[in-house]
Image 1 (cartoon, rainbow over the protein chains, first blue to last red):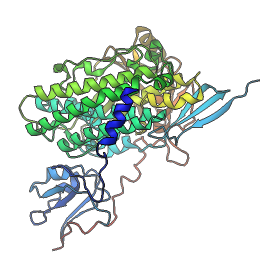
Image 2: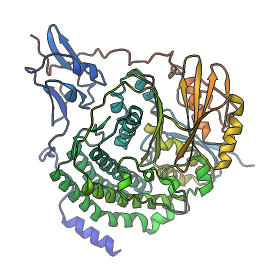
Image 3: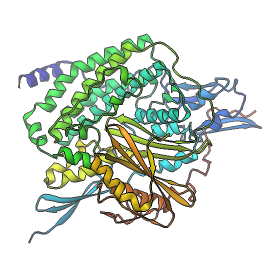
Length: 100
Length: 360
Length: 136
């Protein structure tokens, strides 16, 4: 019973546990995998990332040169980042926004 | 003349985290027979595994379960490494232990919170999940994702823990350990909680062995069964001690899970202090696997088995998954006979059902 | 590499399993693999962390005798094998009539090699977004 009263006092006088979301955003740590993107100037369109993607979300063509990613299929596993020979695929910290 | 009624429990129930249906045949408030009906979340993962590369299957194995995902990928990598005769470096083994035990802590906190919610103690549910948020922050800072980590690979792991991150992890674990005794006392020493848990769903020791129960359900009935004793990954160097209780009811299972929280915290601390320097992965060369193996590992819910068979090409011939909840289902059906209707939610959640693993 | 595998025939299944139960082994699981004209069925048992396996080759069309009278836990696995691979099992303690895992109106026996996968063979043809697209 004493524990209960102690616990009530402590929780009443400390600050709230929740973040007030639109005014205070949560800080994302470094290295979080959010959204996959490419630095298109370094890409050689070799197609290694397209072969390895487990969910078939990438499409690379040589003629005309294009690299497209389907964000609805992407599972953000990071396999394409590893196999790219020019290391031009990166992962941003924020996730895909809803109006894509 | 006594009439029998059949009441369906589930698939939608506030207590269950995942859908399963139990047909309860009742006579006057007591249950005489229970039959399961599964298949609500069957995804056909075993068929997908035969169509993809054996390296892409690591990402598939991670997504079998949403609560214990690192341990599935660790077991798959251990099975393929045994088939292709790959020696994993020591530092990678210690890192795998760290992430696996962190996953075990988060899984036990989740199920203890749901158990408290099942008999109406919502405040304790919120406080246990608040502690769980600290554990998920540790995982996000060290690997980049909160639940589905994507860190285990064939031949080692993909990321390292630097000394600054190691200090951060030790600080967070200390703060978690300070909050645990108060929460454990509210769960184990409260009068009304004891009335609902002691003597409910008793499973005697010989029945547990005959029905093939695994995990905390078996250890709470007196069976000494924990695969971490065999010493896979780095458990052989970390002085692991098993937790066993004798009573066999729901209260004993809760005690086993709370004590395992302390064991896991201890293992993570020892692994961080004793980790050797060295590479974190080796390159995998050679032809694809062409043999069969049964890989086993200790998941938070029990013993997990993968049967992997290759035929020399890059696609596997057969990938079979047997999860611990599948093995505990017959034990659940045995416990339900003879109990009252109001005890069914507590018994169903005390075996720790993870139905999306069971039905893959 | 599975050590400790013994090959047995269909008639000896019950006697071998009964001997293992008297010896104190625990039932782990059963596995079935489609080999074309026959099914390869494996039984796995465990005692003190040591595994023991039994292998049976079952030609397609023959019925497999159930062991659910000896180990009650086997009946869930045998029902699942009936649904997903089309193995016919005789003498089950509780028979779910082919609806344990698969609902009505779904393709039958999906794990057999002759049944193609649904949806995985078809490439995802939905149009992608503008992120990262370069036309040159």
